[in-house]
Length: 513
Length: 100
Image 1 (cartoon, each protein chain N blue to C red):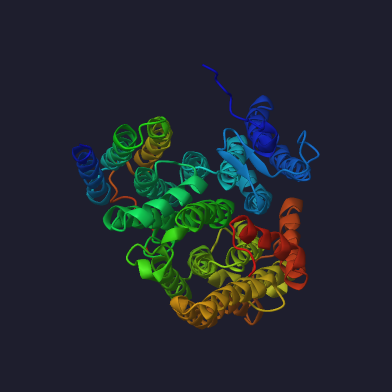
Image 2 (image 1 turned 90 degrees about the vertical axis):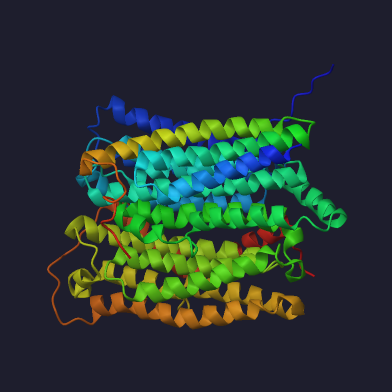
């Protein structure tokens, strides 16, 4: 019998493999220098991310891939597939990890004395998981990628071992994370049972056939869809599965909270897009209720926008406030996700890109403030504009971008998401429920301005003088500048990102009509 | 013929779900999580054995789930240990400093 080896094409996986090896090197580097090198470990992690970005660019332009013109294509027995979505989200994951590591130099100097290598190495390993997930073409590799993303984050959330808040955050995140993967897996097992394959593209075809031949597959698919929406909803912190997010963000180290809110959320979005928008697209149709996942996710998005924005108003801790704001932002992103036309996924990509700069920047500013003062209360930001104007201005810019004020990138992101939903709703009367999403989105965006502006008011319009004068180290400055440049540049000149993002829609088969 | 197996998996999953939601003891929560993962394994192997008999995708998936669940349990037990060090107890009642 002839045994044929599958086509491995390991060249396509080069960025992931490199970053994985680099993470192990960061672990050992900290050990062989006897944990004495304070910031060299952090700089080496940053260097690893930069080199991975370079390798990603080289693979994508085909320089490092023998016999191919670009980095698109499948490898590893079709478990690994590089497409436009993979490229786009890998850039986001690398950027988020870069900004998270850059803003954690203060914490590693003061609080993490003996485990700096582990701290940075685990962030890198989680990034590897996210990158692997974004290239997965198959339920098994998707699951492995998701777990490689979350398991290091459990450890990182509980990283301050003697701090009760941090341990509590780790415990909560662990239980929720494992619970949600069990739910997701139970749903995936039904998908496998119905379609007989774990390859997502094949699954789409098989489910279409199953759907056309057997009309009555209702119950089993409802179980699967509900379980998977719940599983991914937990990962994305979408209501009613959002209760863990504020606690975990408050308790865990601030850069990790930032990484959770951007990297982990983007990973959940990729998983959602791969399973639902690609695999289960046959069942996106209001006529197929109750199997229709579109309206289910629509209801969840409305809940997210309302609950996130309303509860954020009464928070006094800025990390909790940002947690609720990130719940609301996930709601806005889901509007783009359920608009299945050529604008939908493109708007999701642009939104998460803009959100990365603004949210990582805001968390970086919070981390710098916390390193100096030890406080996360919004009250302690009073009068900060006089004593440390640069930090106040940058934080204000990030918050305004999150609120969606032009000309910052957050405005265009919200506009694109709403425009995608409206174009979907006007094209087909069956999807007119998307108008409701846009309406709720517009209304709650006004609420969101209230709590973002509250922080700005405390910093700029308070008569008191702040006792704190914040100075910051080079990496933190780089992160803040990166966020500022990103928020302004991609808000004013968004075309390159929008072009790249519209390839995501094309890769999923949503072509302009 | 596969209905008893699927029913077993569903019952196990429900027991695990109930356990995660109601147990006070964090070790109990970990055990319930394992029940949920193993219910999924039974599902995968059943579908592989009775419907999609060509290929071993379902069984492979089950093996990977076992491995990942073990890795998850390692981290979970380490966090339980931290819980014990900070509160001298492993009940979830302790873990309620942060609310709303």
